[in-house]
Length: 290
Image 1 (spheres, rainbow, N blue to C red):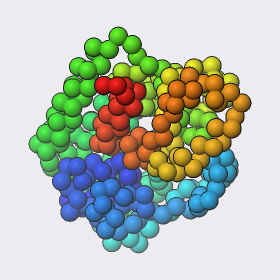
Image 2 (spheres, one colour):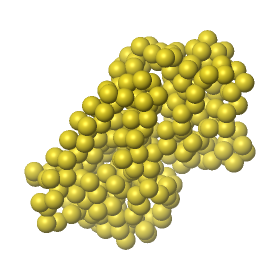
Image 3 (cartoon, helix red, strand yellow):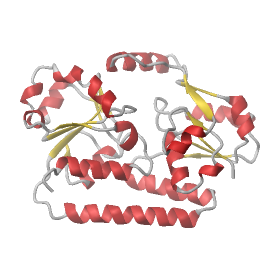
Image 4 (cartoon, rainbow, N blue to C red):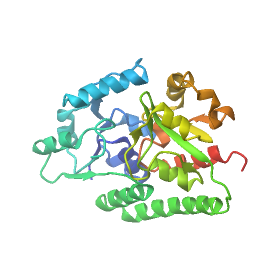
């Protein structure tokens, strides 16, 4: 089977299922595992954000979306050359990956037998279901079963540990810094599975913008900074826009030095197998004495 992935999380699923040799096209964002960097880049960004502040990035992206312009360009000639039997995409977010409308416009240039599979995730179980679905379509259902089974065993260990806790710390997960946004979809669920309480985010609901007053009133024990698409270094570079706000130093999590800057791009933004690693990172972060 010839596979093209238009989403980094889908690329990670393909490799986790041992299908890397069948992958014939990825996006410029696909950097894990390392071998993904050797695949043809069929998607490139139309917006350059290097050197911009969080607010400037938000303004540029919002202006482009409101004008109806796409965020990404697909290499149609490269896609034709890839000649995929299966295209993996998503419908959830036009900011994070190629829009589904763009994918539908490709129907006239790919072969009639090409299957388009949209991997849309709102929960941890959705991610596991996507692994199973890709495995089934690609003819490696047994491998998918083994992978999901091993992940569920790791999850069971976590749940057993959490079941013994008498206290759950309050956690806020920052998905963007300016404007201030908290994570939704699977992020609050990860906090819950890790034995915490998400102060504001709602499971299986979109991420949302909050005010600085709402942030202060949430009184978190831990502040987890995981900006979408940023690694830990980028998150640290952009954190200054919060640190100088009124009342920052008086927050419980800040006062007790419990602000943690995490690699959002690797473990939280992408709804692939590494969400389980992200869950374990949250667990260790909010239960540092275990």
